Image 1 (cartoon, rainbow, N blue to C red):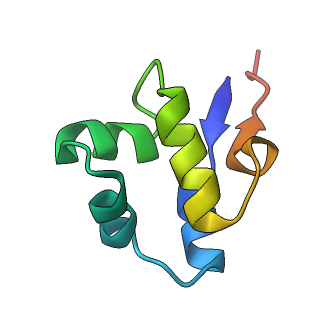
Image 2: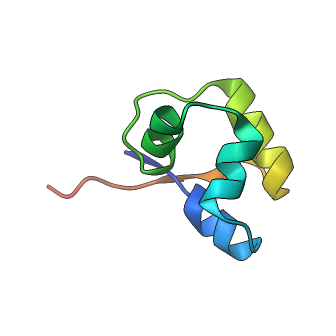
Amino acid sequence: MIKLNVLDLLEKNGKTKYWLYKQLGMSYQNFNKMVNNETKSIRYENIETICLLLDCTPNDLFQIIENER
């Protein structure tokens, strides 16, 4: 499973979830699903914008979580 680490990156950068929401210009429903790892896809455009806003790379943005068996 791949997890989006955007909330951790926001905290490290002293930014809020609301700030990022306003910067991305997405619907709040889609944004909330994205940051809470409840979506199946994220547009490349949004990945790029988040990386530019938070001065990070896609490697910083995503984390692979092993499924417990």
